[in-house]
Image 1 (cartoon, rainbow, N blue to C red):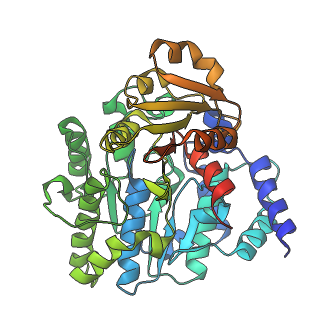
Image 2 (image 1 turned 90 degrees about the horizontal axis):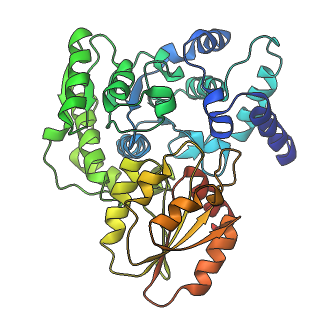
Image 3 (image 1 turned 90 degrees about the vertical axis):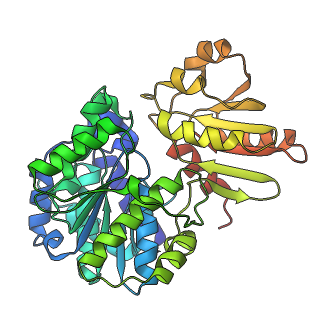
Length: 412
């Protein structure tokens, strides 16, 4: 297989299958008919794996990667299924921090291209089965599976995990999951299975009670991670990681009840070596120290609020580059923008990317110093030119913004 053949296979995958990253709501295929058929083709690999299921609005990726890092430090061969990817498709499926083998991806796509014409799985369904099969072929000890969207009707919800967690619930994807916190919490709680422990990381009493009630119906032990007290730190430096760490510790405590050996030293080292062990980037990621450049994939109001609060704690003038996708309610984000900043709004390089000219009336109302750019790299290079000593750059608003920035600027 050549690099060109691999890229052609990936291009086919993105072009042929409905893809939420590219197509938005029209690509969302709730229900399990397709995923079950796909799994059956491969002999149901998901039934042969020890899985841990991680749901929630924000923090799924961080929690999954921290847990994976700890399991790796403990000597377990650990599979990790996250979405979306930032640069390369193979980031979605990892074993012990190594991206999925490109030859496997190429051959899997080649085999699946001959599916009957009437059988049209979504991109996420296709990728989920690919992850299950890759993990099965590689005889992993544990698979950590992140929910794609929602929970109740998500493709990953066909698994029978040994543990589950819901990190938190916030307003996001309201066009698919519901307009209220309560409605979204019900969708997230849909991953709860009979008798399987469920860990809840949300401090909101309304959310907690919805998860607890669903757990009671399913006779699933309910564990409240917010009651855990800890001063453990991670190399993932976002302030919001403190809440995710508690969820991870609750997961570790439950694994111990399964007889899975994980020492305190493994936990400490795992938390402090997440980026090294799992190659996880994009969450309060320091691209460089001098000049200080930080990027974060937070893309909904709850996530951006935490990120902007942390930005306010840095006593520097900030050059902030932001881009959003079409369905985001930008007016609420504009209300919480950090002060002492210059803003550069861009259109994410994606068919769902929203051009800032579409919401310039809103920008004028918030009385900020801003410029509009067609392309992220133009905005970044302009910000670098304006940057004075002891100032900083921040990039965010969308996974696509961070992904494009890293692809263009990380050393290859």
